[in-house]
Amino acid sequence: IAAKLKRNAPNAHTWLEIIATRWGTLAHGIFLFFGLATNIIVSSMLILGGSATVTDLTGMSTIAVSTNTLARTMKSNKHLQAMFLIPLGVAIYVVAGGMRATLLCDYTHTTVLFAIILTFVFTVYATSDKIGSISKMHELLSTASQASPVPGNAGGSYLTMRSKNGLIFGVINIIGNFATVFNDQAYWQRAIASRPATCVKAYLLGGLAWYISLKFSTIVFAIPFTFATTLGLAAIALKGDPAMRILSPADVSAGLPAPAAAAALLGKAGAAAMLVLLFLAVTSATSAELIAVSSILTYDVYKRYINPSATEGQIMRVSHYMASFSSTSASPWAGSTYEKLPRVSFLTPTHIINQTFMGVVLGSAVVPIALCVTWSKASKWGCIVGSVGGFFSGIIAWLVTTSCLNGRVINVTTSGGDYEMLAGNLASIGVGGIIAVAWSLVSPENFNFDVTRAINAPHHLHPATQPSGSDSAEKVHEVVVKKAPKDTVDE
Image (cartoon, rainbow, N blue to C red):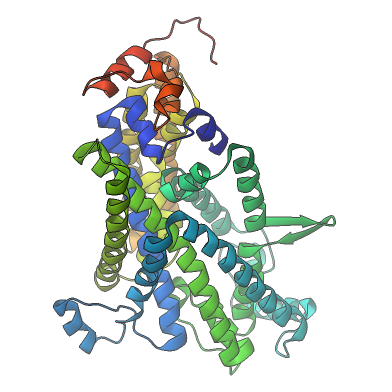
């Protein structure tokens, strides 16, 4: 997708600019909803998850607020201070340095992050007197499996890859992450900022570094697998250890086993290392979200609908305002979520909000967005109907499944189960994709990507695609989007 973006719209600022140029205002408004919804959910997830861990490690309250109403609440509630630290701290270097500052911070943060992760790995499997080896970890996990078998795992064991719930979560996670990547401007802006010759390599290497690294014919799993097999399993293995605090289901849902295990293994040093790691990881992701929201509000709202003839200076000034607005509004939104929503499943302040529920709400837009950037035959109305129809299909499937599996009881608790979320995710991405592809095959368009290549390009490069007049976008759509002959071969 990144390669197609650099080929078909090399000068676009956002993926929504491509939607607007190709399919017009209606489609732009619909996909604008999906894009901003993604940024709001991801930002809330980052702030809530990060602040929950900061609170657990330091005792600092979870929400830091400035309004009088919330300030009064702060006096009577312990969880009231960490939430403004992340977005406001990030906003300083985002506004000052923009995308360049974000990328530089990503590089430096990741370097330190890997150093801390390796420290935890060697502590757990080499130097710790509590575990210290793979064989000791195996022994402790076997004991834990006998004492508390895992439902859905083969033999109730922690030492198996045969897990029914793990498989279901894997499917939901894949769909949810597809929804995140395709709808989130934070991912597109990396491709936009890359050189055409390096963007594909960069994404492939980033994916390998995140999931699996190959070195000297040895498979070494990186961030997710490493964390799960070190601090995650250590939290299980150390159950009953005097240094390991007891974790409630709410603590587990909030992502607190890892910091608890770090503190048990290394004491205050482990807690401090975990705090630094968390801050670096969350600030890197949050900075990308602030840039993403700023770009969408600047180019797809201000420049498109408010001031189409805006100068570079005006755009720069508005982008700074929007980044500041995004940072100051993210924390109150996350704070209100923390205070009002029950602490269950997909609504808890963890990554679960992204991995289970996001696919239900946003999965329907995945295939239409991909088709817009890559396929000249993609139908405007097919992709619009697919994204909207998939959205409602996902919600309906989710709620109907909840009702059928829980004796017609639909509430926050019953709707957060694995099968309920699986049904919603599959319906959303499946219906959206099927409608978009089928409609495009039955009634294909013949779009000329020279139009999207002309987005923000120097005027002399694409003179034929720059019609004059206030309704130029509509004229472009009328000229280049027409029914394709039945015997036309795809490009």
